[in-house]
Picture 1 (cartoon, helix red, strand yellow):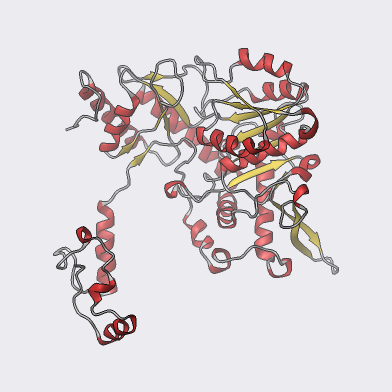
Picture 2: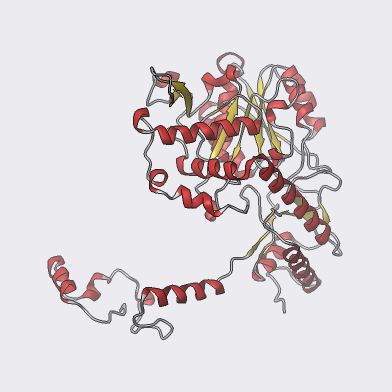
Length: 470
């Protein structure tokens, strides 16, 4: 029975209205195993707000989050306190879809600023107001690129690298399958971790129409030769979709400058721009393109104009979705944008500015180099793709199974990385580590020391479960 100290008169009146004989009956759906007979000794019977706040803060300190060296599509970056303090203000937190421009100028202006920042970051000319997440953004980009490539006449093929996030590849297949769009997997070179030139070069030469997805960095954190591949694909008349990490674009060449023309479309996950990890969401996707492709872009686009008196104003310029145009002409089923996360990303980029974002990217790269050097200094640990440049993730391998190592690290409060067991790897085992500007030298040293103990404890172990580390 749930512990109920007393039943005040107003509660008895409520029970009578509900036709219940007791307060216990109100909670009879709670399983018996979860019910308590008395108040736990550790919980005071009644304290004021000040005392209760102190108790909660003390207990929160005991529940330290695990040390995170896990990336694989979601990244722990520092978020200035002002970002979510402003985002959760009523005018942003509860704002509705801006159908009426005259009543939504603030929301529209914010989306316009977001679009302007994404255009500058990716080096292209037009951005939409965001999509649901990085995976759906890639799927929509592939659909858009197929339309640009001549969907109805030439039956374009989508060349999707194996070194793209596995979840993204699954979403692309789910979205493209009902359209009967063929997808071919581009393998990665098992030695370098990069696109396999021996497979891709002849395939590009044989295609009459198609779409090439170029990840930068790829899922293993490696830097691809995107300029060369963009030139090769576009020379054959193929469309190029750049799947990019927005933080990395502070240091790497933007998609708009890949090759002589640039990528046709750039897309990716906007979570690194001010969104916390939040157990996997909500996040936001972004998409940019050139002006000559804008009519095929999904979602909505906010434009800036002037009114009859010459004052600046904002309005929804293009909304190529079923709600606004005939279904046969709709380019997407994307019905909205991630307004709250767009607000966070806009504030994040505004507060950091170009210099701040470059600092975040450079610091993340530096921390990852330190981490990789520290871990590969241990016996049996080495880089999976040695010699290939990386951004802020790197694939490692060891002489013991990755699941076993990661489980043992987790038991010690360290999220050690992403298990690459789903990939056909040359060594048969590997894991992906990541470090952002959040990680410190002592934390990297702790990872190294813990992994060293795990490796020593695991030698001669059955590896069926994680060892006990003293």
